[in-house]
Image (cartoon, rainbow, N blue to C red):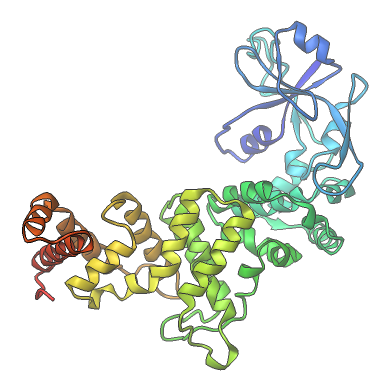
Length: 426
């Protein structure tokens, strides 16, 4: 058996990036031979094994042949006759189809001390050339057989933002979309790839590539329709709503926002795509329309609960947070309650971050301050400082019950907010 390092580990090492995980391909091996060495089988659809000590993945060299629609419609052949070049040919992009001859010891998983140098490269598809040229290029026309590769390439464009997509690869992706291949993608896989792209350094690139090949219109039509929708130039000098949302996303990446915040940024303005043409560029009531659309998107993609709930609050309330500098104590208290800030102060920080990204994701505003956040934090701190037990007890002693007790607590918190911010009590 011959063993080679393959895929992302080779690519990232050549780019001078940290190598997170190492994947190996085994040529000339069989499941029985791997089992005899103590490897643990984990592959459901093809022979992949975990090393008993390092837990790194070792896959038998294999070929794949299209046998049906979608990303699961493949017949896999793994046998000792499959060559390294055969295995590399089934991979998606040339930059991921490079192998390195390192030959670790099977028993320990370690490289022998006699290993000469870093190991020579096996690169039959010109992956190293494309790394230097900063190009994302498909390996063979078999790329078209797996629609997940469209999502993967878009995700790589977000991670390697200075890479371009080869024109012939973009043409192939458009053909795949026209042939309906992306319609067979399951929601879980779409979300998995989208979430990884959202967490990249420039998430806007993922959606630019998906839009360029036509896949965005099929996967996220609610987002795709935002391009070309105008906004008021006095609030949005960039004018185009799609451009704005991409600027907000990239601001979220710049501020190292977590996934839930980035998803909220993605969906906060979806309702602007449904604004009647006769009222443009104004978008009255777009917040509630955005929230309704987001509920459908989150359900369709089976988005995790924390992402879905945060995005809903941000969609509904981002305009109110932006205007919060003009709110009095009672109105601030109502805003905090609608955001559930009293019960979930940590999540409220994420709401503030998403709104800051929205405010700074505009032409000429990337370095602007967002004083609303500090004022709202101060208001929340004042509200949380109220010891509600005595307030509730006093209300009960006056014969109040139920909602009336809650109103007394809210009034006490509003008074604390007024005092904390130096405002007149409402």
